[in-house]
Image (cartoon, rainbow, N blue to C red; front, side, top):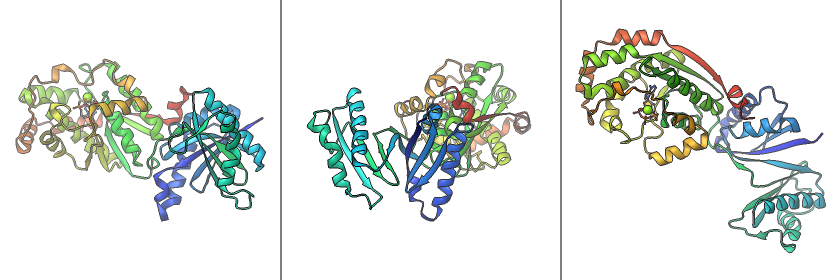
Length: 395
Ligand code: ATP
Ligand code: MG
């Protein structure tokens, strides 16, 4: 039976100098978690990750590499003896396949790690590409080729095409833990993904105001958490019953402040959860100016409740960019399902746009809601998601 070989290029972590081993180990451990129960071997060597597996593991390995954070790209490789004719045949097969898929031009990227091999990289490139353009299969284009075919001469010869782009960044689990305020919207799942790509481990917190927000809304958030978990390896979702606190806001405060006070209350509960799970920051999907509650003044009010830094990875992105990314990571279709994460009953017609911190804090204090905050934390429900399970239905 044929052994499949995949080759991934490592990203930013290769710049890590003295810490390199720690980052590399994390990356391999993460891929192992994505491949739990799948027959496959992983090796790291000179800035490359090699994954070997039998044919039956192929789909699982491809799916795992499509969700692994920390690689710039990956491709399935053909491996053969270091025999120039065999290498040439493998290159030509890739060129023919690319032509059938619409490619017109190519470029060879040859590398000779084994200096005992009789041809240098320039000679290899010439030798393997000659018949491809002579026979009119593809034209040579060194600057903007439709396909780049790589040849690497190591203990064997590895030949591969352009492959797929990877999720660049640092391996999950190298950057501390963050607590993501995850709503059912488009933005917060993307915010979580962004922090995962900076190496963070992300747990989530969702505020549920049953029956004003429906069970479908909760289900939607769970589905989103599962999708984020495909990249996050493992995550927990803390579901916080927040109806009583919302009712208190409705009873005791000016309507224009209700959204802002709700966000401030969320941060209060998030502080408690973060301290409980050892998270070092809060993460939200806010983007400056996107909606009324996301002015810098209102963010200041929300932030004034936080005991940890609040990270807003989307703060400078516009909606189009965020949607593009949501589609790319697979959360968009779920996020646009119609179940609201916040009931219109609690959305003011004229929200305060530039609240004053001292005033907002005063109104917040007048809610007298500390007991409700503590209660909400106490009654949280925790759900677990693993990448392995979340990837299962994609294979
Ligand atoms: P999203 O698309 O993430 O819902 P949004 O554009 O709808 O964001 P807001 O509703 O103002 O913006 O929420 C701002 C941020 O507050 C969200 O990105 C999220 O991090 C957090 N948030 C809002 N509602 C909830 C909720 N019910 N549970 C947890 N976090 C929430
Ligand atoms: Mg929202």
